[in-house]
Amino acid sequence: MKGNAYIPFMRSRGDGSTLNLDFTKMSALDSRFTFTRSTTATYINSSGYVASAAINEARFECDATTLAAKGLLIEGAATNLLNFSETFATTGGTNNNWTDTNLTRTSTNNTSPRNDATALRITASAANGTIISSAALGTSAARTLSVWLRRVTGTGNIQYTLDNGSTYTTQAITAVWVRYTFATTTAAQRVGFRIVTSADAIEIWGAQLEDGTGASSYIPTTTAQVARAEDVCNIGTITAFNYSTTNGTLFYSGVITKQNTGAYPIRLGFYKTNTDEKCFNFLTNTNTLFFNATGAVSAETSKPFTINTAFKAVMSLDASLATAEVIVNLNGSTGSSGATALTATNIPTQFSFGQAGYGANFPCGTIAAVKYWPLTKTAAELAVLTA
Amino acid sequence: MTDYYLRTSTKSNMEACLFAAGIATVKDGMLIVAETYTVDMIGEADGDSRYHANLRVCGDLTQLDELPILDPAPTTPMRVFA
Image (cartoon, rainbow over all chains, first blue to last red):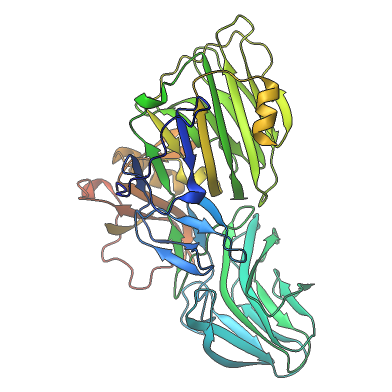
């Protein structure tokens, strides 16, 4: 689907850049972008509420608390493995229901993080009131539980379990909706929550259990598990960027909220689609960002990032000299591929965000800004860009 | 968009069907899905140990005979697309 809002961003800003994208200042994609996602999806809108995006609609994420714009949300495919993520119904799920013990369901007419009246309020009718998923979900694997919680009455402990109540961990919560995430690798992933003190009450909404490390955007469910498809976005006409196979610098700032594993998909960068070849890109795998220039002889180096923490990364290519290399910088930390006989000869056909076809393998998070210069910058200049 | 529910005896059989239908390929050990298709590889479903996958198609599906499509589709599927 093509965007239709013209935003004059692809011009040199006087610093020699030929591509300059600030997604934190956009609310729609320029018509030169192509964006696809074959399912609906959610995001945090500019009012701080969970909102739904239609099929093929790009999402611009904001911080739920500060309302600050975070940029373009580009996520891999994910599935919410829990049924009844909002109603926590006790019957009717194909995979699981929710079982109450020592709990009173006060109502489901409370204002939710979506700003509608769908949040469930639960009150402990005796000590240790619990609400727990009725079925273990799959074999042992790294998964992430996420849920919005807020306190209504009382001051007692609020706890979560990942193993059907064998163990509980206390989570401090407030009277304000916050989405909490909990990592789990237990064998029998029956998740749930406990109100320790009788008569204490909380509200709960948007429970999600998904494969992998880190939470992606919320996927609402009712009677079945629900799968969200990946976001794929590209700029198909790149002539104006003056791409150079010998000298170039690419800057990227953003946040990754969920890691990918076992693959090195393009997070963003120049891509040769007809032969599915990378050119000059940032790649990801687990908690590591890879800086990649590819051709007859390729160069690559890497640096670890911290999940859910904003970072700035930049890479500069110099393949014009005998000691060609890629110099990089992540949050002020420099590095390089080392001197190589680099020939980054792949000629790109598009600038890509995500990599079409690899959606089950790429990470989740927001892209705040991207810049490209068809020239080499020094290590000192790169450090300034990520400071 | 049309959704289909697929089932084979094993994961490798499912992949073979998707390859034969031109819906997916393998590169560097990863299942790569062609444009206009979305594939959700599920595995066991509802206690059925056979291999299940969901397929979403943008446009017409011309490879009906090459795919192990559940017909009729399940009335209460364990997993759906958003």
